[in-house]
Image (cartoon, rainbow, N blue to C red; front, top):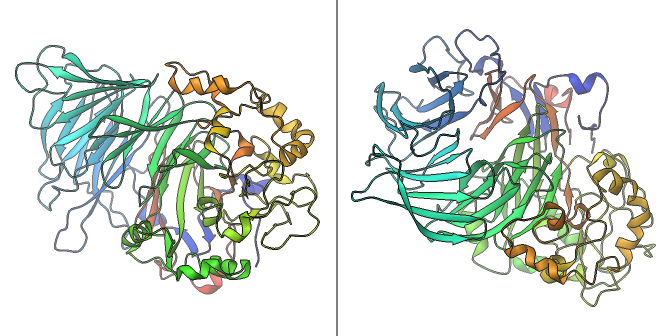
Length: 614
C-alpha cells in the first residue's frame, strides 16, 4: 500500500498549490473546469463584506433527462441555471433567471422539492436585512415577501428551509438567535406580532403568535445566545438540529417542541451541521477548526476530526459513498483476524439502497450489516477534507472478545489474547479508519474501559508524532465504556488549561491518563448542575458529557485534506456523480466522482500528483 503525504502534513510549495484532483479508496476525483458555474463574466467576485456564496439544487423531472437546476447567490445577484454537471460544459450566457437586489443581499435559499415541476419551482430566498422572498425562477414571478417591513425580525437571515414533507411550511433562522415558522398561505400583518409562551426549556423558548386571524409567524423559537447559524432537519423530518454562536448544538423534537440533547463546541461558535443518512449521527463544525461527531441515540460526542486550519464552514454526509455490507451476524463472534478481514471489505458495496439497508441494520441488535459513513467538510482555510466514520469508532465494544481484557496498556509488551494493539508506524496515516481496534481496558477501574483511538497509539511509549499539530494531545482517549455519570461528573483539574499548556504537558500527563482515573476530581459532583443552569460557563463544560476533553474521545484524521480554492470555501454538496464546492469568489466547481469521466485512464490514476494512493 502506497500512501503519499497529506497536504496537511506536507510543506513548501505543495501547501500553496490548488489541487485539481485527489484520490481516495474509490479512485480519482477530478475537477471539471468546463463545468464551472459563476457570474456570466467569469470575473472573480470581490467578496469583501459580502455574504457567503450559497448553492441550492432541484430536479424538475423534465422529459429531456436534464432536469437538474442550480441556484446560487454572488453579492447582490441571484442566478438560476440548468445544471449540466459531469455531462456537458456550463453555458453561462443563458441563465434561466437572474436577479439583482438593491439595499439588501441574498444570504441563503432553498427549493421545495415536493412541488417542483418543469413549469414551476418554489424558491425561498433569505436576505441580509431579514426579509424572506418566495419566487418562481421559471415563471419569473415573485410570489410573496415575508417580514417585508422587518416587523418580525430586523437581523440577517442565516438559514431558510422548507419543512420536510410540506408544500407550504418553512422555517427561517436569524442572526438574532430567533427562528420562525411560516406558512406561505398566510400574511404577516401590518403591525409587530404579539407572542404567547408555548413552551420553555433549557436555553430555549417557543412562542405562538397572538392574533384574531391566523398570521405569520406561526411560531417563534428563541434558541441559545447569539446568532443561530444553521439548522438541519433529520432525514425523517421529525427532529431539528440547530447550531449557534454560543457554541451549542441543540437537537429538538420539532413537532413536540422538546429538547432531545445538546453538545458544546471545544471553543467558539458552531457554524454548520448535518445528519447522517439514517439519522443516527450528527456532525457539526465551527470556530474550533474541528468536526465533531455526535450520537443522536446516546446524546454524546463519539469522535472529533482535526484537519482544518481555520473555521469549518460546511459539513455534509456523502449518501452515495456511505457504504453498507450485509453479513452473517455469527461472523462477529469469530477471531480478530476474521473481523479485520471483514473490515477490509468496507466501501465495496455502495449501491443506491444505502438508505434502506441502513434502516435494516437498525432492526436488530445482532448487527447483520457493516457500515462506514463518509462525510466531508470545507473551511475558511480553503481546504476540502473527506472523513470516514468507521466501526471502530461507532462500536468500540465489539467484538466482545476485545473488551474483556484488563491488561494495562502501558505495561503491555505484546498484545494479549483477544486484544489488538496497533503500533504507531508513521505520521503519514491518512485514512480515517486506520485506528485498528479497541486496545485493552484500564485495569484500575472496576469496569472495563475499551479504548477506541482514531489515531494509532504505540503500546510501550508515550511519544507523539507529527499528529501533535492537532489542537491537543493525540493520545488515546478513554472510550465509551465509561459510565455516563463518570464522564458527566469527571471534570479534570487540567480542563481549564489553555491548548498550548495542554500540548506541552502531554508527555507528562499521558502516563497518568493511561494508568488510572486518579486525576478526576472527587469533588466535582456539583458539576452536574451545569446541565440545568441557564448560563453555561465554557470552562466548566470542558470535561463533561457536553464537551469531553480532547483525549477522552477518538480523534479522526481526514482521508484527504486538499487546498482547492483561493478564497474561503462556502459550499459542499454531494451529488450522485459528482461533488460540488464553491468559494467566496463566486466560482461553483464540479468534481467528477471516480469513473464518471471517460478521460481518466488507469495511468493517470496511478500518477496522480497529490492525495492518497491506495
